[in-house]
Image: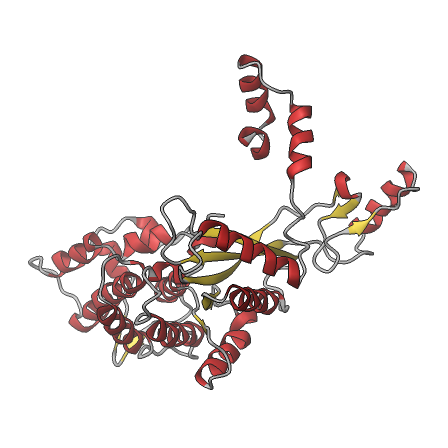
Length: 382
């Protein structure tokens, strides 16, 4: 059934034929009978029930405190219009046109004409991505996955809508219904369409109007910072000194780390800020006959060290909450001290400040054991 669900028909037929298993048609029939309602078409009450049922199924002890994060991130789709036969609808459009009904009395020609109208844009824009809300649970039992998707929203790229607010409202309602659960934070990748919502949420929290904070994803923040320093339109400077990417080449750092090709990879950032990179930079400066600007070299090395320290503050294991807080504040002060021509680093600075404020309120909590689950990292893999 796993092979059938993966869409690999040839592999399924090969394994099924050699093990005298079921046919592809029978597997599709079984899957259709047990398939739940599409998660891109859930209303408020359905999202509340989905979250409540999942939480209390895994946490069987009702006295167990359940603290969780709601992460939101978009996944790019291959644009297409398709017929979803079980519900007799056309899918592939951006919300609210994600399900377009096909009348039962339509002929094949009428259905074909309807699909042509969809291609022509008569029934709304095609979805270019699906934004998925994923719940990350703290301190889960050994036999329970800490992540699960709660809802999705087909949309255009970085569309400004209220999907995140609706999902968070459902999370709050589910927490109240449970009585011993709490939404810790909402986390996004910090794109411009979500800035106003994050700032509004933070103001509400500081004003005592809500109980959860916004935390722009740490990994995304450091990828943005890396991009600004290496490929920005202007030099990243502190005082009279700049971050100098050319030093990375001179020190023998592998090219794909300083000439970025994969902007989405978290692993590439970790390799860039690794101990090996720092040692190469320091070793190059200590060579005989090498003449470099000490200030530029210092800014370059310290920037990489502080990027790693910030990632460590959130993703590291076994760190005291006080140490995490110190790392967050120190790195925030450092990265918000940069200045560029035209202030092109302001979006990154804004997200870093929001992340720091939110994290400082969550680190000391007794129901927080794994700060790495504050982020939308799980959205990258589900």
